[in-house]
Length: 468
Ligand SMILES: Cc1cc2nc3c(=O)[nH]c(=O)nc-3n(C[C@H](O)[C@H](O)[C@H](O)COP(=O)(O)OP(=O)(O)OC[C@H]3O[C@@H](n4cnc5c(N)ncnc54)[C@H](O)[C@@H]3O)c2cc1C
Ligand SMILES: NC(=O)c1ccc[n+]([C@@H]2O[C@H](COP(=O)([O-])OP(=O)(O)OC[C@H]3O[C@@H](n4cnc5c(N)ncnc54)[C@H](O)[C@@H]3O)[C@@H](O)[C@H]2O)c1
Image 1 (cartoon, rainbow, N blue to C red):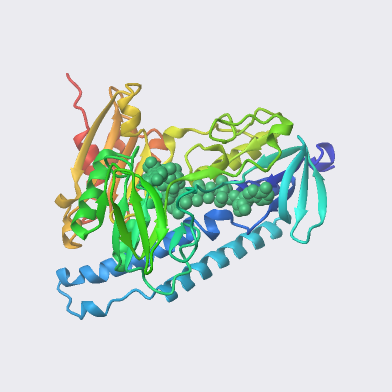
Image 2 (tube, rainbow, N blue to C red; image 1 turned 135 degrees about the vertical axis):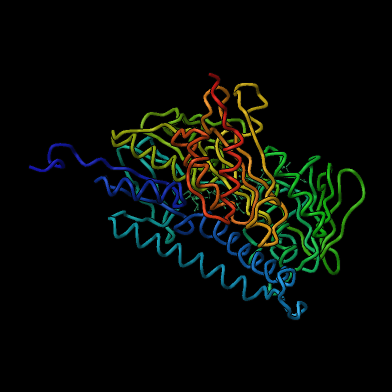
């Protein structure tokens, strides 16, 4: 007799086909659950179709142009004026990549036996979800548990309505025939900073309207400073401590009125003023799911909502809006539903990367958390400009910083600002998740010459000699 004959096959309904939903669906179906995934737009979610994949593909083109234009400093000679960004080709490529990835995920789900329903879902009861399909048919799905992974949408300002021609939100920006002559980016969070960096590197003039004193509020201040210097050096015009009051079309472009007075004109405007959770049309109030004041779904560390059997993951929960976090929360929910070993979600181990030039990667405890006084750490930072490989590559900006628990010497966090920081951070991420000691990092072989040499060097500086 097989296990499935003894234990009934649990059924799980998942609303939303982004990383929070599709990762959970894959894990659940592999472990024998009967899974229905409902998606109203496209499999892969916003992450694959409009947010992560297109923006990072755009940035890959921008970064290639940056490297080509820097090549003369390495002794290469060519006509730099001919290195132009063809937006039509760039946008076509990134949309194709996004569509292909969506299709890969759809195939993977189907191969694993997940039932995919394309349509809009809402709760009827806590274990009954009603789906209105693309064709207008209505069907009810009843299951043992429901996972909500409905993501978020761009926040809109009444006085700055995107029209998809000159005024964009981040989902609309990939339909341009020509490189914007002057892109005004509103919002200096991660989205605004990444797009400002990308369009400048592609060859646009860029103005960034920042409501704060510094760029990247909440991120590592040393890293934000490196980016501010890079923007200043590259000619990105940052207007700080003012908000965009209104954005309107002019004859040839856009005009952005500022709350501090005055205005800035450009050819195009990109609004990057944050997101709002997709939680309002789901019938959550009817079944008693608790929401925060901002409309996010309240969950605990194993992704449970206030209603038994209803779980939530990803951007709709407002806990670190990252694709990797959404996927982990979804996997945790499934493990909990299926009664498997569950490791609760821990903010203190999350790694993230800001894909500007240079990249900014962070893991574990942050400067902001240390400032609360809850964590006692020793920290050390070395500039990348001292690294031999960086010199060979003509990299003169960036650093490695490590936080070690004071007294024990265990690595609890770190920041890497460098080209390829998104890959370099893995060593620190492993150290944080496996509770390695700074001496473990220091004693691990690195390649000479390599950027990771600086990771080991920072760890060596944090070594404490035992007193005899
Ligand atoms: C410009 C940009 C760049 C980003 N880059 C990165 C990055 O590089 N790395 C990173 O980790 N994160 C990045 N993020 C964040 C990342 O996109 C999100 O954290 C991630 O998409 C969250 O995944 P999710 O599954 O919660 O939601 P989503 O990816 O938004 O998927 C939710 C899905 O649910 C569907 N849905 C909603 N309501 C319903 C309903 N009622 N019925 C059926 N379906 C519904 C939606 O159509 C959507 O497809 C970026 C965000 C932005 C805006
Ligand atoms: N590489 C990545 O992993 C990546 C990339 C993009 C976004 N994200 C995630 O998505 C989430 C959202 O980031 P975001 O940058 O889209 O939103 P955000 O809410 O973090 O930043 C929006 C910024 O716009 C400002 N703002 C609001 N109204 C304004 C106005 N009228 N004028 C000027 N500024 C205004 C806000 O003060 C805020 O600083 C973050 O958690 C981020 O981590 C991740």
